[in-house]
Image (cartoon, rainbow, N blue to C red):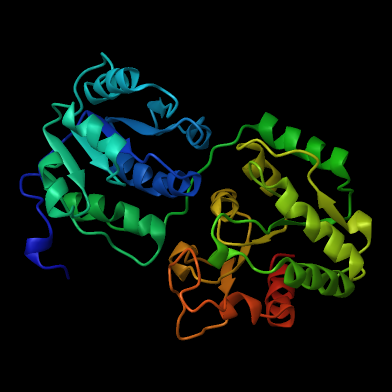
Length: 362
């Protein structure tokens, strides 16, 4: 139980906000993980209008979400004066009335600018460092270990809400799902194929399992399950990082037609739509795993320097790690310089978990 000095929530028990602004500037995965909190807020305040401030690239995550009334899309290319005008417009409610409650889930400069220019009576966040406290009227501690629960922590403590292990939410249309099916067919997925999506890229070195390990794992999985077909996903600028995996897998014996490299980068909402046609998602610790959870597709993540806080604590979602004393380090680069947590986690350690999960999902 946190000490009383770690939070300030006086006066919130009777709050009945009509307009709420949730601020999560970045990243895509974090915006996906915000959706359970939005759901909790909507259940607690069903008549409230809930709006979200996030970067333009993240906004499609919230498209068609019935619990979100409006999304403010932050354009980082705006100049200083135009940015200030935007912050002011957001902070004052955009002409639709003052916010009763603003919740900051990230405490970054652009969000603090919105708070500074807003007259909202309640500005809530997790406990800020002393130099940020003037931006907030209330704060409450986070609650772990799952990352989405951490985001919900301040809301849970402030309003007495109970965490019910809600998964992230992404709302796809029937047309989006159908278009993804047509796309997969055009790329070579056939009836009878058991599709596994693979995300082998990451911006942090301590989250990238060696491509040679992936190649060997895919080949061995196919030997055990000849119905398997693998689709390599990649994000902006990552095609050249994903391409070598196809070549490596073919070099160890995986037939070329069983491993597909998406011929173009998938659009953001295409990723969860594709995952609705997928038996299992395999990869590093990045946003596609959260999309998979949101659409009900099982996930298996190879974990290096990251913690298991990003793994949804429910059936069908697992991670595998070597379990070294230095794990998780949480660093972008290996403090020891050896990357043993990834290099020594061999494919034959991951294969039984992958095959067992496929059997469960039959």
